[in-house]
Length: 248
Image (cartoon, rainbow, N blue to C red; front, side, top):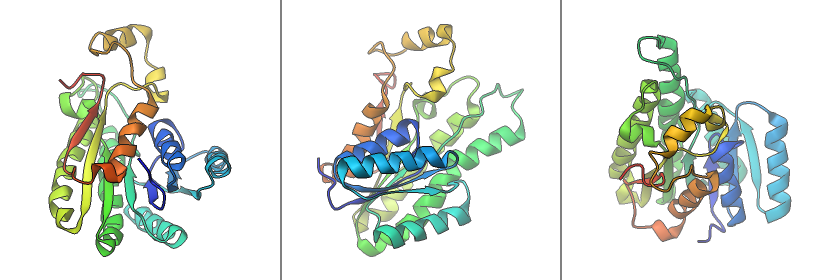
């Protein structure tokens, strides 16, 4: 798998799964633009590290993917800096967990805006470039929760299930122009989000995973590498579950 000569844009790329994808893409030769919302110093440190280690161009942008106008400005800036965008990874997302009877309207709307509308915002803007190029790969991060639901996460599950339907629709719309759109559905992955879970909750989760362990961020990045590369040139409209067997 070789991404040399390709330019990628990854939203939410300063930590967790997003950062793992940024690192993987840079390691395989892609120029990478990524977004962050907080911690400019951390983002710049990642830029400096990857630029030095791999000799590719890495650029960080402070941008809110949930904002339509911010997404438009971001894509214009990335196109000016890199020239084109070959791979878009819609990774930005949040959780605001609560049981439905306790969930506020704000908690529901905030998750839908950050997780689902952000995918629309970036896809719409990047698609304009990819249509002119007549090529591109769009990769949307959904979740095992979007496939099977989870108590206390109705807002998150709704947003991630929506991404799957969105992915299939975009694959239909742009397939004739050699633009592919696929989704990755991570299971329970070792990130900042899962580190805060209690030990009892983690033990219960492990009983649901046939492989008997939580996943690593680099294992999700491997899937993103495959879907961004030409090895997946005949794959579109699909949801690839990287979940240790939970979606069987």
